[in-house]
Length: 117
Image (cartoon, rainbow, N blue to C red):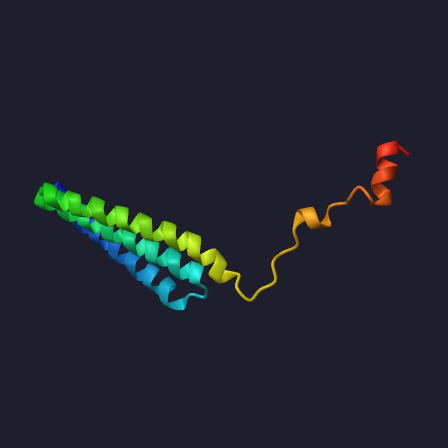
């Protein structure tokens, strides 16, 4: 066995372990953001497997496929990042805004602080 073969076997085993753990996270959830992160990890593992296949086959076409899959995954993750915060907070009360709880100019405590008393 060559060094490349041993490296490919070890990398394949690590990819398999990562895919299993990401699949568990995908199934258990609990929320949409957890599932989106698990899908992103699965996509990264898929790109890694494609690149490993490109290294083993020494094919430049496989490299192009890996880059295209990575770019499509990035676009999918970016669009999910814009969509999910709105979906995740739907039906919940927003946290108090710092500007809403800050003292105003009409507040007597601010007048005392301004005058140095």
